[in-house]
Image 1 (cartoon, rainbow, N blue to C red):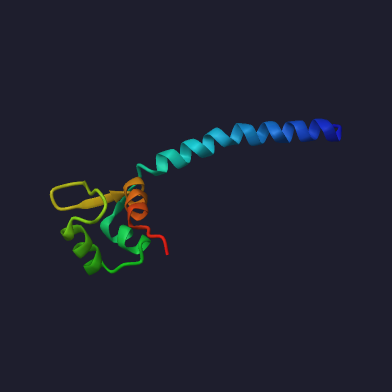
Image 2 (tube, helix red, strand yellow):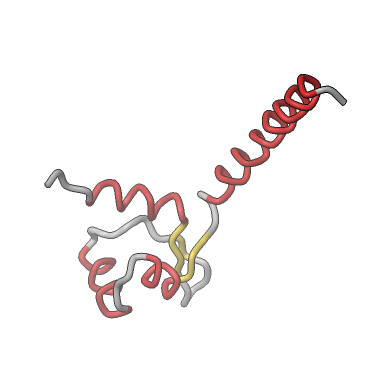
Length: 87
């Protein structure tokens, strides 16, 4: 196999892998984090997480059952962006 053919095949593999990675990233936005996982991801305590949600300033919550809530990765990202400030 020539170097040119090797480079062409490598470029084709990179292009073929790209849609799969995009699809995985897109699906990851729908993944639901448990309340404890959400707190850990944002490096806050459970008590602080409860205060944030009770204040109405937190992310959109997904009710998983009568007693269990979660936050999607996408909603967490949007909430973090809304909290960002210019220094």
